[in-house]
Image (cartoon, rainbow, N blue to C red; front, side, top):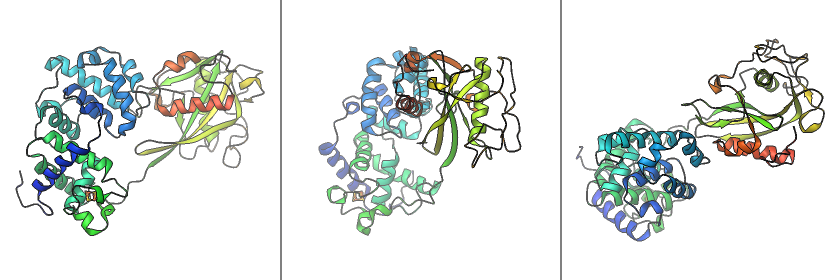
Amino acid sequence: MNDAPVQGPDPQEVRSRLIEWYDRHRRDLPWRRTRDPYAVLVSEVMLQQTRVDTVLPYYLRFLQRFPSAFHLAAASEEEVLRLWQGLGYYRRARQLQQAARVLVERFGGQVPPDPEAVRALPGVGDYTAGAVLSIAFDLPVPAVDGNAQRVLSRVFGVDEPADRAAGRRRIAELARRLVDGPRPGALNQAVMELGATVCTPRKPVCTQCPLAGLCVAAGSGQPEAWPVRRRSTRWAEEDVVMAWCIQDGRVAVVRRPEGGLLGGLWALPYTRRAEGETWLAARARLGAVLEASLGQPLQWRREHLQGRWDFSHRRWHWRLYLASAGCGAGWNGRGGERQTGRPAGRAAGRRTPGPGSSGGRDGDSGTPGGMPGGAPAVAEAPAEWGGGAVAWVTLADLDGLAMASLDRRVVAEVARFGGAPPGHRALPR
Ligand code: SF4
């Protein structure tokens, strides 16, 4: 351990003020009423990247259904994902279940007070391990999340960018010094609590902070200038075509592949719009796969719904096209926009795009077309589904599937657009 003098205030003074403040001002949260290591683990995994208010009902429901690692390990993944639905970052749910299975198989269903073993659990990084070990076992292990990073940067005036290795090392060293004393669990939670309630990213309330007078950032008059960051990373922006495709009261869904974005959850059929591809060409690609699954042509509505959805480092601009199967009647019983001039057989692998493949102004008007130059669309499941098949489920079953918030929101939009709630069996073809 590096015992070089710390720049800024005395860590022992910071530590005692923090714990004293925490004992008086901490919020009463359900996971603070227990020291059951499994419950602490569940809460910490749920709190990763997620606000306390959002987590509260999920935590209570989850622990009611899975009160121990044994219960969670024995559950189906589908059920776990369903309980997690709406909480986001679904990989956490699957990893938490894998962790429960490891606990059952190797540790008699208990979280061991062993830093190495806890860090080796699926989905458990340094932060989560530190939180569980310090809160449940009072071991002096630091837990540095975004809140702690901000508080420590400000209090000690860390000049290295917090998103660079040197900055992270410095903050980790400060956290290690702070936690090295009595009640390490309280200390870690105090730092995080201060970051969540007082030392917020914008407008920290220094007048109510127990560290005012010690804090380097507050002393500068510009506490928001910490943590120092290098240029913010750009979001990856993607255009995504989705389909609401109805046949005989059943709607097409696909399952996202494990390990990818929103892996394992059900979704409306979708594909990313390729560079240079028009929206309608991407729709045609998607439509060809649906037609191959149905064995008959689709009729598309001219209108589409659209919106934006932000993930942590990715932004989707989505368009939802609505289609029904069969000749003569369009979606909602009105005249549809015919996509193909001939039925596509189940075995059909290819289809020829309709005339006007160059599209309109930006390819959003006129008949669907292919890539610039008229390349034919191919009825292969988009790579985003990992080659999975299209499934057709009733509207009632759709309500019971584990879907991401994005898809739930889109389904709700369809209901608004079509004037019938999802799950309503009278939703028109
Ligand atoms: S004094 Fe202000 S900037 Fe410093 S830790 Fe407290 S709230 Fe944050």
